[in-house]
Image (cartoon, rainbow, N blue to C red; front, side, top):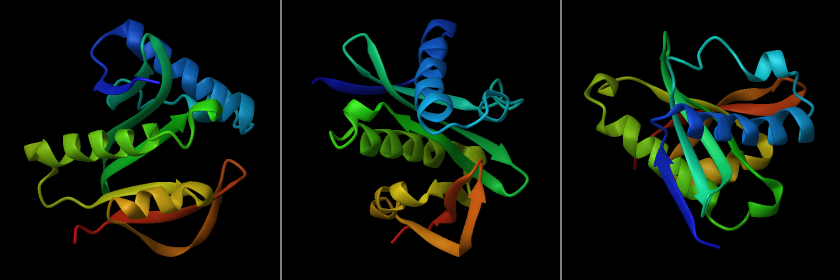
Length: 146
Protein backbone atom coordinates (compact mmCIF):
# COMPACT_ATOMS: atom_id res chain seq x y z
CA UNK A 1 0.00 0.00 0.00
CA UNK A 2 1.41 3.35 -1.05
CA UNK A 3 -1.09 5.99 0.06
CA UNK A 4 -0.75 9.61 -0.97
CA UNK A 5 -3.16 12.51 -0.43
CA UNK A 6 -3.46 15.61 -2.58
CA UNK A 7 -5.69 18.51 -3.37
CA UNK A 8 -7.89 17.93 -6.40
CA UNK A 9 -7.21 20.35 -9.23
CA UNK A 10 -8.82 18.68 -12.23
CA UNK A 11 -12.15 17.17 -13.25
CA UNK A 12 -10.72 13.67 -13.72
CA UNK A 13 -9.63 13.39 -10.07
CA UNK A 14 -12.89 14.96 -8.90
CA UNK A 15 -14.80 12.22 -10.73
CA UNK A 16 -12.67 9.61 -8.95
CA UNK A 17 -13.47 11.27 -5.61
CA UNK A 18 -17.18 11.21 -6.44
CA UNK A 19 -16.89 7.47 -7.19
CA UNK A 20 -15.42 6.90 -3.70
CA UNK A 21 -18.24 8.91 -2.10
CA UNK A 22 -20.80 6.98 -4.12
CA UNK A 23 -19.37 3.64 -2.95
CA UNK A 24 -19.04 4.66 0.72
CA UNK A 25 -22.06 6.89 1.33
CA UNK A 26 -24.65 5.86 -1.26
CA UNK A 27 -23.95 2.14 -1.64
CA UNK A 28 -22.53 1.17 1.78
CA UNK A 29 -24.27 3.65 4.11
CA UNK A 30 -27.49 4.01 2.10
CA UNK A 31 -27.41 7.82 1.85
CA UNK A 32 -29.66 9.14 -0.92
CA UNK A 33 -27.52 10.25 -3.89
CA UNK A 34 -29.35 13.59 -4.09
CA UNK A 35 -28.39 14.25 -0.45
CA UNK A 36 -24.78 13.16 -0.92
CA UNK A 37 -24.05 15.25 -4.01
CA UNK A 38 -25.13 18.84 -3.45
CA UNK A 39 -24.97 22.44 -4.60
CA UNK A 40 -21.66 22.99 -2.76
CA UNK A 41 -19.49 20.73 -4.95
CA UNK A 42 -18.14 23.59 -7.07
CA UNK A 43 -17.43 25.92 -4.13
CA UNK A 44 -15.72 23.27 -1.99
CA UNK A 45 -12.01 22.41 -1.97
CA UNK A 46 -11.72 18.65 -2.57
CA UNK A 47 -8.97 16.16 -1.61
CA UNK A 48 -8.26 12.60 -2.68
CA UNK A 49 -6.27 9.70 -1.23
CA UNK A 50 -4.80 7.35 -3.79
CA UNK A 51 -3.02 4.03 -3.69
CA UNK A 52 -1.10 4.38 -6.93
CA UNK A 53 -3.77 5.37 -9.46
CA UNK A 54 -6.63 3.93 -7.41
CA UNK A 55 -8.79 6.46 -5.56
CA UNK A 56 -9.40 5.11 -2.03
CA UNK A 57 -10.49 8.16 -0.02
CA UNK A 58 -11.77 11.70 -0.30
CA UNK A 59 -12.94 14.74 1.64
CA UNK A 60 -13.77 18.40 1.07
CA UNK A 61 -13.99 21.68 2.96
CA UNK A 62 -15.88 24.89 2.37
CA UNK A 63 -16.81 28.21 3.91
CA UNK A 64 -20.26 28.42 5.51
CA UNK A 65 -22.19 31.03 7.47
CA UNK A 66 -20.91 29.28 10.62
CA UNK A 67 -17.22 29.20 9.68
CA UNK A 68 -15.28 26.51 7.85
CA UNK A 69 -16.86 23.08 7.49
CA UNK A 70 -14.85 19.92 6.82
CA UNK A 71 -17.04 17.24 5.28
CA UNK A 72 -17.58 14.21 3.07
CA UNK A 73 -14.72 12.21 4.59
CA UNK A 74 -14.86 8.78 2.98
CA UNK A 75 -12.39 5.90 2.78
CA UNK A 76 -13.13 2.65 0.96
CA UNK A 77 -13.92 -0.15 3.42
CA UNK A 78 -10.90 -2.27 2.49
CA UNK A 79 -8.57 0.72 3.11
CA UNK A 80 -9.87 1.72 6.54
CA UNK A 81 -7.40 1.33 9.36
CA UNK A 82 -4.35 1.89 7.13
CA UNK A 83 -3.78 5.61 7.82
CA UNK A 84 -5.58 7.12 4.84
CA UNK A 85 -8.28 8.73 6.97
CA UNK A 86 -5.72 10.40 9.21
CA UNK A 87 -3.73 11.59 6.21
CA UNK A 88 -6.92 13.08 4.83
CA UNK A 89 -7.90 14.88 8.05
CA UNK A 90 -4.37 16.31 8.38
CA UNK A 91 -4.18 17.47 4.75
CA UNK A 92 -7.62 19.11 4.82
CA UNK A 93 -6.99 20.78 8.18
CA UNK A 94 -3.54 22.00 7.08
CA UNK A 95 -5.10 23.48 3.93
CA UNK A 96 -7.82 25.25 5.91
CA UNK A 97 -5.31 26.64 8.42
CA UNK A 98 -3.04 27.86 5.60
CA UNK A 99 -5.90 29.79 3.97
CA UNK A 100 -5.83 33.44 5.14
CA UNK A 101 -9.63 33.67 4.75
CA UNK A 102 -10.02 30.99 7.45
CA UNK A 103 -8.33 33.11 10.11
CA UNK A 104 -10.48 33.54 13.23
CA UNK A 105 -13.28 31.39 11.78
CA UNK A 106 -14.76 28.40 13.60
CA UNK A 107 -13.56 25.13 12.04
CA UNK A 108 -16.09 22.35 12.47
CA UNK A 109 -17.50 19.12 11.06
CA UNK A 110 -20.39 16.73 11.49
CA UNK A 111 -18.53 13.58 12.54
CA UNK A 112 -20.11 10.16 12.25
CA UNK A 113 -20.01 8.53 15.68
CA UNK A 114 -17.76 5.69 14.48
CA UNK A 115 -15.21 8.22 13.15
CA UNK A 116 -15.30 10.73 16.02
CA UNK A 117 -12.19 9.20 17.64
CA UNK A 118 -10.19 9.91 14.51
CA UNK A 119 -11.24 13.57 14.50
CA UNK A 120 -10.44 13.88 18.22
CA UNK A 121 -6.83 12.86 17.50
CA UNK A 122 -6.54 16.03 15.39
CA UNK A 123 -7.98 18.42 18.00
CA UNK A 124 -11.71 18.22 17.31
CA UNK A 125 -14.02 18.26 20.34
CA UNK A 126 -17.66 17.11 20.48
CA UNK A 127 -20.11 19.98 20.93
CA UNK A 128 -23.70 19.32 21.92
CA UNK A 129 -25.81 16.23 21.66
CA UNK A 130 -25.84 13.35 19.26
CA UNK A 131 -27.95 14.05 16.16
CA UNK A 132 -29.04 12.08 13.12
CA UNK A 133 -28.15 13.15 9.58
CA UNK A 134 -29.07 10.90 6.63
CA UNK A 135 -30.07 8.15 9.11
CA UNK A 136 -26.53 8.12 10.61
CA UNK A 137 -25.59 9.23 14.15
CA UNK A 138 -23.29 12.29 14.23
CA UNK A 139 -21.72 14.77 16.60
CA UNK A 140 -21.03 18.40 15.87
CA UNK A 141 -17.28 18.63 16.38
CA UNK A 142 -15.24 21.81 16.60
CA UNK A 143 -11.51 22.24 16.10
CA UNK A 144 -9.91 23.35 19.35
CA UNK A 145 -6.15 23.44 18.84
CA UNK A 146 -4.23 22.51 21.98
